[in-house]
Image (cartoon, rainbow, N blue to C red; front, top):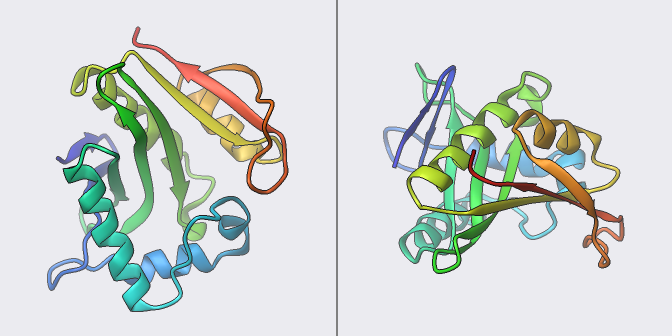
Amino acid sequence: MEINAGAYYLRQLRADRHLDDRAALMEAFADPQHRRYVLNYQLRTLDEATEYVALRAAQWACDERCSWAVAEPTTGRLLGEVGLRDLDLTFGMAEASVWTHPAERGNGIAAVALSAATRFGFGGLGLHEIVYRHDESNIASAVVAARSGFTQVGVEDRPSPTGDPLVRWVLKPS
């Protein structure tokens, strides 16, 4: 499932002879700021990056997670990743996630991609609520959530994996 997101397009992560996202994934996951907030994955080798690409495809196939590479439309170059994880299609809920490649931060890519993914969630999947969580210290994530139409609902009782308070935002279809 590809999505036209205006200046960008959302597509599946790829590692094939036509388009290979693995080097850009390894660069992003090596970035100290990225590593500070994304603790679940380490992509240090091509094999780990290949497994990551395969994992995202498998999660999509099992209706666990919709995940897209955020790409530059003319070259297909990876700019980041956006997704709807913890999909509960029965109750119409999911949690949104997004990150931007370090070389592309500050260009508004994350908010555009997140808005496109949530529109798909509501229109294509019939979701009724999408949550977005981030560490309280991650000010950039707060800006992305607000620009994408989410409403901040508070701080959760449990901290994030980094130990930072976890801020919760909610978006419902308009």
